[in-house]
Structures are given as C-alpha cells and as structure tokens.
Length: 171
Length: 101
Image: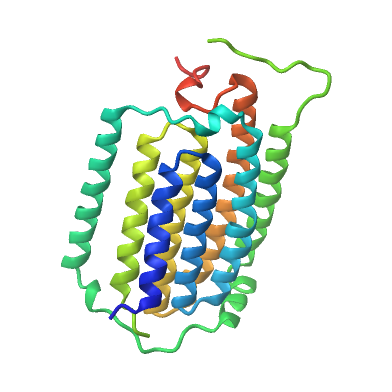
C-alpha cells in the first residue's frame, strides 16, 4: 500500500524534476532541482535511512544546489532565459523517455520484485560507521583524495589570470 | 513498513527517464548537468531501496560514496562551465567546437 507521505514525495520529486528541465529561467530551474533533491531525501527517510538523508540534505540541497545557483548567476542574463532546442529532437527525446519508462516498467512488473515487502528492523546507522572504518577504509581514503583533487582542479580551472585579457573565440 | 519495494523503483525509473530526456534534448550545459544530477539521484534511490528491503547496510554505504563522488563531479563540471563560458561567451554545447575534428 502506498501512503500519503510517499505520494507527496513522489509528486514533489517528479514534478520538480520536470520543472528543473523545462522552466524558462535557469534560476527557477535550479530552485526546482532543489525540490527534487529534497524529495529524494524524503524517500531516504521513508526507507529508514536517516543518515543517508542527512548526507543528501547537507551535500546536495545545502551545497551543490547553492553552487549551481551561483554559477547560474555568473552567466549573462540573456543566456539564462535562452531555450534553443530542435523540435524534432525534443519529440525524439520524449519518445525515448516513454519507451524507457514502458520497457523498464514492464520488466519490473514481470520480475519477482513486486511481491517483496519487509518487516525486518532497519539497519542501524552504527553499522554504516563500522563498515566505513573497517571494511571500506581504503575506499574512504581514496574518496578523500579524490574530493581534495577535484576541488583543487575545479579551483585551478576556474581561476582568472589577472592582467590577461579573456580569450574570445568567434568561430 | 507500509511501502513496497516496487513503489520506490517506479519513482526511480521515472526520474531516470526524465534525466535521459534532459541529457538527450537539452543543449544548455547547465541543464545537462541538472539532468545528470537527476539520474545520479535515481540511482541512489535504487541503492537505498534495495538496501532497505534485503536488508543490509552495504547499499547505504555505497549511496554515501556515490553522493560524495557526485559532489566532486558537480564541482569540476561547474568549473568547466565557467571556463567554457569565458572562452565562448555562451553555454550552448553546440557552440563548443574547438575539439571537433
């Protein structure tokens, strides 16, 4: 049975995902994306995974969405509202989306998954901490290095060299 | 728990399909990044849903790693957008042609 909370989160997530892609203004689009990410955090809470939900809110809704918002604000005003797309390509995209939904949905319903429910107690978040520090510790260290490297790379990429005129291409 | 596994999987499939639509149709670099984020979130939802119904803690651990990698990816992606915007004064991917053979 689907409860009202689940339905609310589902509507929020899917409607705001469509709005994020289809809204004319990129700023409203990124705010709608925040709705999608928050809705997913809600699903995580429904799935008894409060730790992942917390992480989702802190990383996605808190930092990534704000980062995207600031990047959008660095872009010229007319580019924020510009929506240039091929009509044929759009219909092909919608077709691809529907085919994907129908194919994966029918695959899902023909599998044994619809009958799965659970009465077992949720996994304790202490388990996750233990996993991180015992079995997955090399991965955790590599993750830290990857994050540090990517942030350094991002800063190095976006750095503006003072005194040098921006290169502008006309082609 | 009143919800079944299939409910979460249906939402996940819907998000995946919307994300693929966005990646294939949109030509705006930032909107393509939105679509990629939506796809990554669909995958995370799948991981956590299966982890809850099996049940084990590995799915949640993997979802946490995935969120961290996605954060790194977005940081680099946005830096690339800034660089590309500075070079071409545009964020339309069709205009980024210097790598075209």
